Image (cartoon, rainbow, N blue to C red; front, side):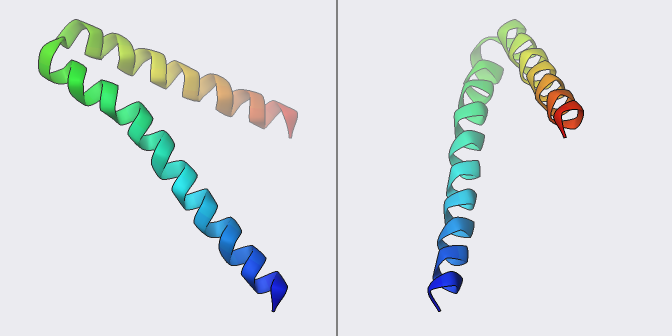
Length: 62
């Protein structure tokens, strides 16, 4: 029973962490889209590039 509680807490923590990171990435993008269109494009490029680098490093490490 304790193992099931651990898995449930791990799952909830993972979901909460992903939601927090999504908000941290999405908020600057939403604000820059409204006020600074050039900065918005730059933020999108940086976020996409960072995603590619992280994904490639995880792929190569695994």
